[in-house]
Image 1 (cartoon, rainbow, N blue to C red):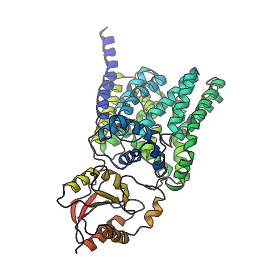
Image 2: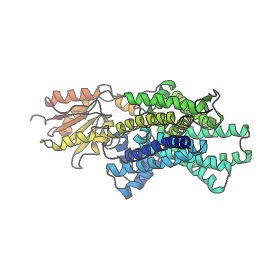
Image 3: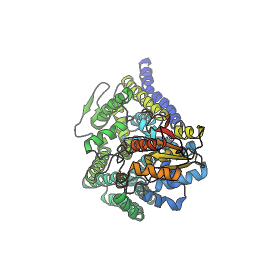
Image 4: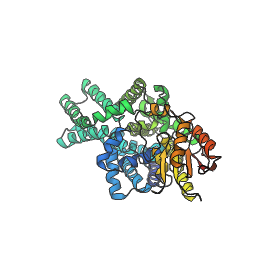
Length: 511
């Protein structure tokens, strides 16, 4: 009797770890205002600032579909547009991810899989990061899970509400991020394979496929803007890499994408338990069997993740577009479900608890980094400009990619312009970006600055090394110094910050 009680107690230990992970993960997702907004976040708010009717036009010069921007606009109308308020939408979506991923894990392997999966998701540095940013990636995760769950329930019983749900989730995914198209395509392939192997009634499979096709029609009105973006915006901010290096970058993002020891350890641990989730079946307390064909329970999710990533990375390679690890938001939840299944295959409860403690502990360390690390010096630059004794006449930002994060925090009375256009700083125009920057001449632009603001104090916020700019920002600083005299350095770029900036102050031209 005592031995039985002891075993029962040991089996409760993983649940206790999951409970701790949930409490900590929820707290981290509600840590919203600790760091200032960086380029992508500030750009999002600039896109929505002129109202719903202008969002489509602004995105034509950007590179995303509109659904998330409509939601942020609606949210800000109610909650306000402060940093914490606008980030709260992502926090809500991040919290919604937790019950959805638990439901997906329950379908795969019951409560034994749901517990570890929930712990991994709650402590995930990837999910915590995008639960605290004004970006669409938490929405992508939520929609991907909802789409998968709705599709599976529709395959079991294709009622009209479930099929409508599949259609709505499909359309919403496609209107949230372009990489979602690869996930939808992978879902079609998985359904076709199931159809060929008679895993589901063929009529039911066709109904679910038709629901997805109907949902995809929601993207049609956006096609003209999408084609314009392909021709004129793209991803000029980064170099296209080969699919292998992109894949490595993407999967390391699951552990936080950092070189810190805890991130490397978490990556290694996730890789081990993911392998167990794909190939392992528990045999008894101390042994498990490995099936190199992938165990049958994991095959649908494995095919979904594999097809989606292969399509996405292959398309990026063919089209020559850049890649960011956050694009893997389309599959991160499914990877965590498979990793949770891997932990569940460890038969001994104490060992299973130890592995889970290690994964959760390393994940929480990485998540703390994500919520505490400064993402931009834009607010620091703005505060230094306002605090300076000199009259703040004009702030020049170089390159323009630093503009949104600086303009966000400057009061309305200060003029802020960007290199090379000397236009407004609140929003980056990515149209024909590389061509425009290649044609820019720092000397000519320094002359134009002096013609327009010769009797004014000029602040230059800049960082070198941005793609398509080379050393133009450093040259602009030198050209201004040649004309106005040596600058006063107010801020030196902090290499530990995700978006670092220098700030120089130039006195007016001598009479």
